[in-house]
Length: 240
Ligand code: MN
Ligand code: MN
Ligand code: ZN
Image 1 (cartoon, rainbow, N blue to C red):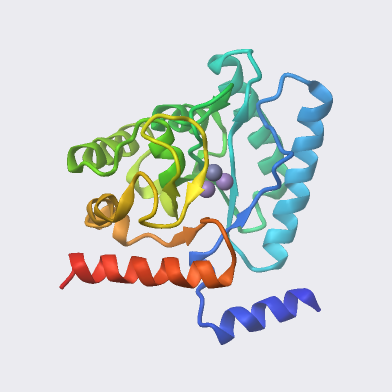
Image 2 (cartoon, rainbow, N blue to C red):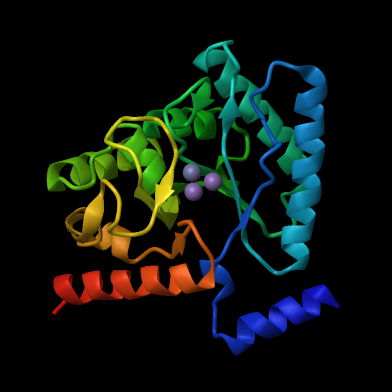
């Protein structure tokens, strides 16, 4: 019943199933050195992907995980192995997994495009994997999208390490903290350190503007409606 209701709402609001994703639960850590938690993460993710498929959604977004001190090399292999175990079972359900870039903090893997690429390369199911770019997490990790050259550098890194065809979604968030802070605190669009000018720069690239974008800014419907207004104003400034 919930599934039918969901699909009806998607139709009612004219939202394409190509433009949405399911975000994994936050307890999942595919990089953990703890075997019990690793297996639990794998099993929970399989279950979440089955639900994603039942809803007719094609993309499942997950943070690569934290190696909790074991180092990046350990993390890449641990995550790739987990993804393979998961996809061996659910790869026929029509769901693609998107690895989201995360804030540079703790043992987080995936704050650099090169790291996301390393995971994808080590998986046997690289064809089912892509990436999501979160502007707040990227800003936390020294990708300064207020600067045209830095946006170019970001796109070049994605092209080099991952492939632009695997770049599928954007999480559009401003950042409460300054460049490289690694704090992961989202802010309303234009009210944070990226700012209106920053988003004008970021959104003026063809490779970015063609992608589906999701807000993960604070607040609820009222605040999000305001964020959408701000974004539309930014678009009208760029594309007159
Ligand atoms: Mn996320
Ligand atoms: Mn995000
Ligand atoms: Zn975040």
